[in-house]
Length: 350
Image 1 (cartoon, helix red, strand yellow):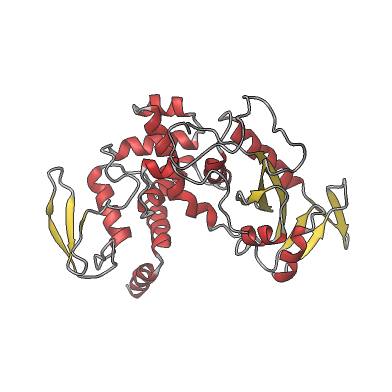
Image 2: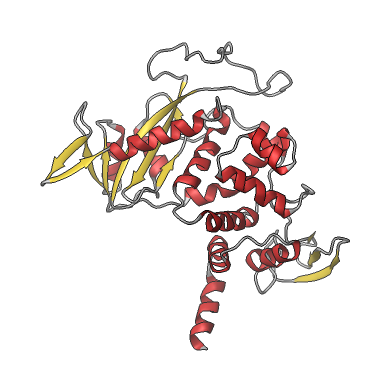
């Protein structure tokens, strides 16, 4: 009994995101009954003490139920009334949780907007907004990876794309003439019309990537992207790009750089290479290519989507269950206008 009490005590001390992972791992299923989802949200978001979802205060009381049976709460500290699903991406959408689960399954199967909208019985605009709401909610899953051991890193590039309907925008003006579909950028080489995406993958296949800046990578760009992602005691294998040297030195990471036109370097009888990161680049390019042109402002979310699939080694049902739990519990609310008004270019400060 004392061991069980220790487990319960340790669980209550976990950060919110870790409680969600623990809960969904133990349950290991996707139960989409409305009352079950409500119990899950109360357990993971509010805890035993019923903390307020807004001010985190503990003076929360039950405040009756809505017509559909959803429990309402009232915080005596901040005065706000809320339900367990308040401030989540599903709040106010008027769709059943089973539809959201079906849509998440479509995303794990890499289905297009048209395929997903037809399967889930939703419109194309709704399918597009759900895609980015889900990816916003799951971004933390890929942003918290930790690469150690032998890590390979290299950057890849995507053409800048202002894809989208801008004629009614009051805040954005196209900075150049539109490129015709299928045409390359007007400038050759690594110009300001290319988005630099530093990528890294470790020996177990766990990957991380993030749009950083336009043109060639800089030392500050590499440091900003990989700070806290690559373990200090790792062996970092890259090409001969100078930008990795300052980062490795500042983080006490052992850097091995390949000679020009070589993908393999032998040190102390051990072969090191960058084949794994090159394979990741191919996979990422193929994934992005499925969608026939991704707007630069949404490129980060598509990279998150690719890595969610690539980094999961579990059975599809278990992956679906855990991602569904994380999606519900992210505690963010994304409006449709927030998606369309995002910065057209990478906003990473470097």
